[in-house]
Image (cartoon, rainbow, N blue to C red; front, side, top):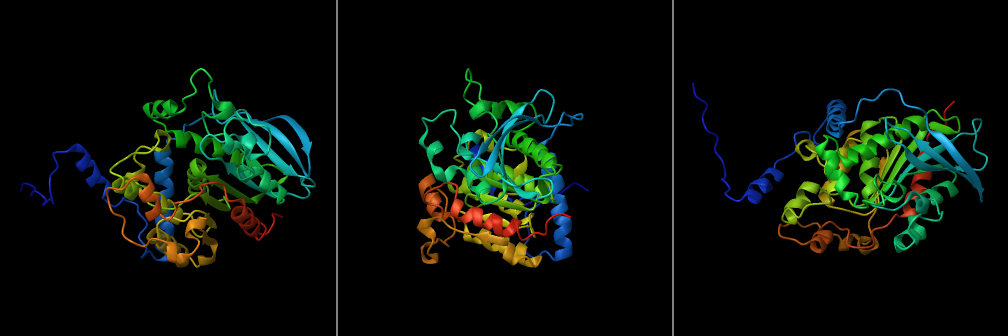
Length: 374
C-alpha cells in the first residue's frame, strides 16, 4: 500500500523561509520539563553521547604530558607557564596561577578560565598582554584568573584557538580557520573543547589540585566551551556561564536568520538540542548564569534542577539594567528584530563583561562546600 502524503501547513518558494521553518522544529533531544528523575538520567546520558558525536573529537594516540616552561613568584601566588599537547602537531600554551601554600599536602580547588572572543590569557592573569591597544584587555574586570587565584583557588587560563599567542600574524583572520575546520569535519568549538578537556583530565592528576573540586568558568565566547565541557565530563564540579541564557534557534528566527560568527557553528547541533537544553543536562551540578536571558528558558532550567532536588544549585543574575524584576521582558519573542531590539527581549541590554563580584564569591561558595579529597 503506498504511503499517504502528510499534510503540510505550507510550501516555501523562498529558501530562507524554508530554512526558517526548519528552525521552528523542536530539537530531537530538547529537555522536556515533565521528565521524572529516573527518565532525566537516561535523557542526560543520550545528550552527552550525542554531543560528543557532534564535536567530532579526533582519536589520538597517547600524547606527552604538559610541560612546565617557566614560573615566577607573584604577590600571593606563583605564575606558571605551561604547554599542553592535546593531539599530534598541536602545542597549546596556558598559564596557571597557584596560591601560596598550595601543595600536595594542601591541594586547592581549580578553575578552568575560558575567555571572551580574543581576550588573551595574559590579560586574564593581570600580566602584560600581546596587544595592549585594545582597551578591553586593560579592564581589570576581565582579569578572571587573577580574581580567582586571589580568592584561594588555582586558576588555569587559555587563549581561544587562533587568537593572541595562537594567532598567525601572516593570516590574523581566525574566522577563516573556523570554516576550514568545518571543511575537515571538525569545528572551532569542538577544537576548543577538546583542548580544554585534555587540560581538565591532566588537572585531575595534579597533586596540588583537588580533583573533586574543579570548575569551568567561561565568559562570552568562552561560555560555550565551559558548558560543553561540563556536559561531557560528569566529574566537573560546576560551570559558570558568564553570558545570557536563551535559545539560539529563537534568536535566529527573531533576527531574520541574521547568523552568528562562524566559530559558533557546530554542524548538526541545533537538530538535537539548544543551549538551554545543554544547561539542563548539567543538573544537578551547580550552574551560574550571570547576564539574564529569556525568562521562559530560566523557568525550564529551574524545573530541571527542581526535578533532581537541586533548585539551590542554579543561580541566575541579571545585568544592572534588569536588576529590578519589573524591568524584565516576559513578552513572547517576535520576529523581525534587529540585534539591539533582540537584546531587550532577552533581558541582556547592558554591559557584557566578566562579573567578578558575582562569579568569584559563587565559585568559592560552591567549591569550598564540596568535601576535599581524602
